[in-house]
Length: 214
Image (cartoon, rainbow, N blue to C red; front, side, top):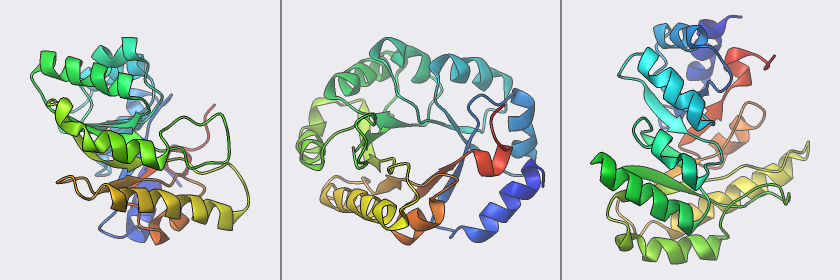
């Protein structure tokens, strides 16, 4: 199946309450345009340079999600284009985004990345750190915390993945004291059905739409 067929299939299987973010990292502008013409509007990039290069070439109504690890010195490349930054993994990064958003004259929607996987390579806050930071959210007037993001362990153990997704949903519920903080970003091409069952509001899917990376 082609890109358009893949998108239609996924949208027919996803609940209306779950947003599909098409992960277009490493994919050419032509592939994104093909997905756009099939009705897809939300796209995810994980490299600042790639987002900054692609966004001006594509329709203005695309909703860009930044989903990759973000270094503080690259924040200024992302803030002008991103509608939602999923991968805030430190307070230092949050402060830098706040500063760049203030300079850009916008309020930046962000998710706190929570470390839920049993892998040391994954970044993110502990649940308690995320709650503590959320309580101090007023210190960052140009940030709007919208919820949490997490990546499960890369494993064939579906029950482990389910436990990890469930733990992320639990963190989201602990942050519900913040107005509008109700977004849960979890689930990719290999595990999105479990994420949907465990209460995600965003799935980030690349391979199942665009095919394997070259």
